[in-house]
Amino acid sequence: MSNCAKFLLGHFIMAAGVYNLTIEQGASWQLTLSIDSTAGTDLDIDGYTFSGKMAKSYYDENPVTMSYNIADGDSGQVVFSLTSSQTENLDSSIEYVYDIDMTDTSDFTTRLLQGRATISPGLA
Image (cartoon, rainbow, N blue to C red):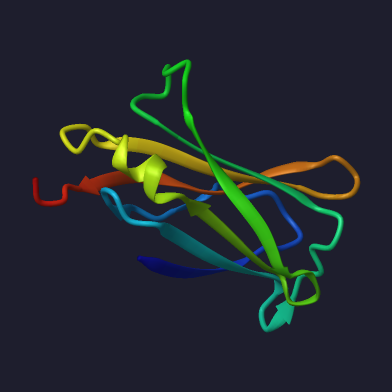
């Protein structure tokens, strides 16, 4: 399942966006983010790093780590993903929490996105 979200980063610090996810158990999953610096102006994210984690609770010591790939740095596009093996091991009886952070070339970290992730079970 593929999702896409667009974010606008202004000249001030603001709370992370909230976006709840549905992830199909046993299927590959992707979320594409397109990040703007101002309305209609893509943020060049070349050299930036990202972190995406999902856990059973905020206190879970073993979160699932999302992989990321900068799809087009000049236009601010980054893709987060989970493999089918990772989603197969998710517990469909639990509503997970997740967050996605971005660190710029000055080592300034911004939380872009957070929310809950519901796991849709597959057939046995």
